Length: 107
Image (tube, rainbow, N blue to C red; front, side, top):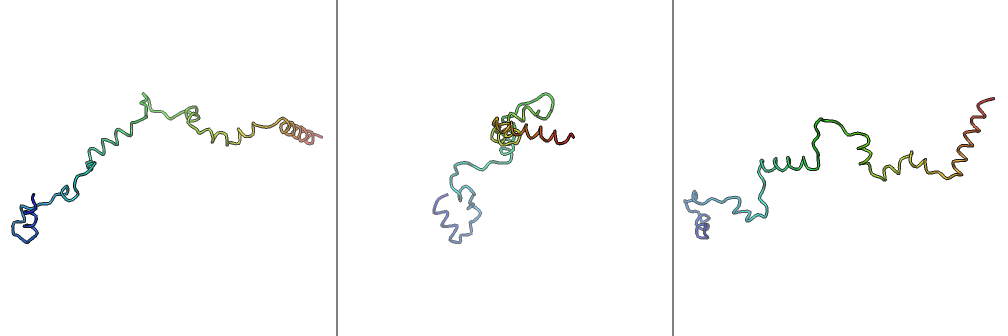
């Protein structure tokens, strides 16, 4: 298309069937063209299998596998771990209180 053809089309000439504007003429050159449906589905299929290993039989993950993926800060914040880190003085105090409670229960 040339500029003369454009001005003739806009000036009200009857020959408008020869003048067609496409989407690429309006938008100009694109860095990345829009993907069609098949391309999008193909890229989803590639991404969904990334990082996954195939097993012969379908099974859920074991507790050992789950523990390996658990963040260390989550483990350190748990009550069971925090309770294990006691000083000797605190441990002695807790054991002595336990003995006293046992003695009070038996007359």
